[in-house]
Length: 379
Length: 135
Image (cartoon, rainbow over all chains, first blue to last red; front, side, top):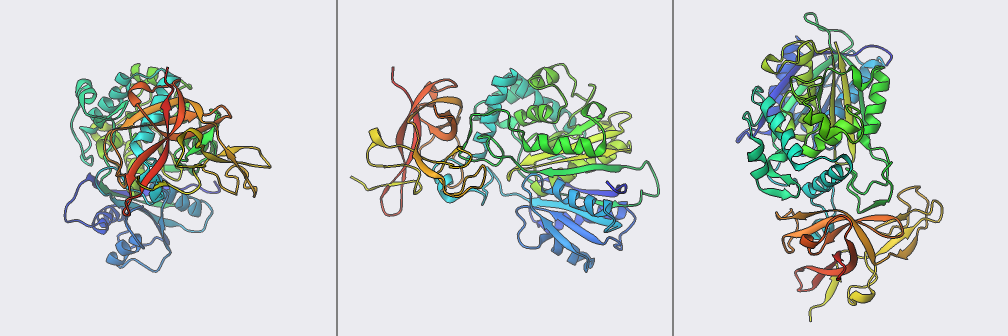
């Protein structure tokens, strides 16, 4: 990057279900909190990027119209589950390049209930039962179990770990612990995945002010990298959900591509990380992410988890916020929610979720498109 | 007997005659990669003019699961098997899998036609699936 980019302030609206509140209401709450936190309630940003998928035409514009803070370019950014990360990426690039001094980035969503219906699929694929999102998750889980020796008990363990962390997150949808027995006994959605191993699509919002200048008080948190990558063709179980692929297991995933680029930009490696928030749409996805982000050697994610390395007390805590399993997944907001959590972690403001002495943090999302985003923050 | 129509045009050589029906793929003249469903532009190297080729009717399950809850837009039978089948020519397909209780990784399977649902005009909509080989 040509010049450093800092987070000046953050805001969040809890993730959950909020009858009677529109997506614009949720976005407004997060944006106002971030502007207040950054000390710029009157504006002062030269561009705004809004990550969202299901909010319709010019949703970000509606939020800023309600505040009378318009005139600057406002971009609504859609990149599936990585929409928030994508919005942060374009903002970071613009500031690093010297185009703007200060940019508002926010994400918001009000998801339909149940299995997510996506205009991504042609109707005939839905009619043929060839567009079942949790079934794709389950097939990736089956591959992980085959290739990495992961057990169904370890898949339950991921959910138990993240829910244990989520108890302390006032912004999470579920703030309660689950026993391994309860997770294993919950209804099978698509074998091996049980209901309590899957996150809930829901509602929420998150916002950040990013700037060429550090905040006036407290530790400075820098965005050392914010990358976005799509898929390469050929993986039949890739997040682009094709109907065919090659008999080739060596094709890099979008997460691997985004992580490689982010580590290079930040000039760090996975061994330098102190805390990670990553995509746990389902329990297997968390473990796949350990391997794709290089947090552990290939094939070792189950063992890594079993050894307690990613617990709050471990060498590299993963999902101290409780992850998407506890928070739920409002697509446009989920990635920025991770960055808000990590900003608090690096400023030692994470309360009972605090990872002591955290200085280097990574956030990761991946999903439809395919899209994968990786953000690295340093203090 | 109800008229049978394919789930989507161009997936199969026929929906009338199960013993001879085959899936239709595309073979790129430049990179030689095989894709499915068939399309004229190669999804690997963007070359024009992929040749339509009938795919093998036998394969092996790579991974398999069972769908128990009704997905959006789907009116067919539940539960149903869903998995990845690898064909001898080195292409992997997403497919419905018959008899998921008898189908697992490594199971040898053969192409079959499956009735999904009847459309508004009473026609039987037919798709491809793979079923375990009888022993």
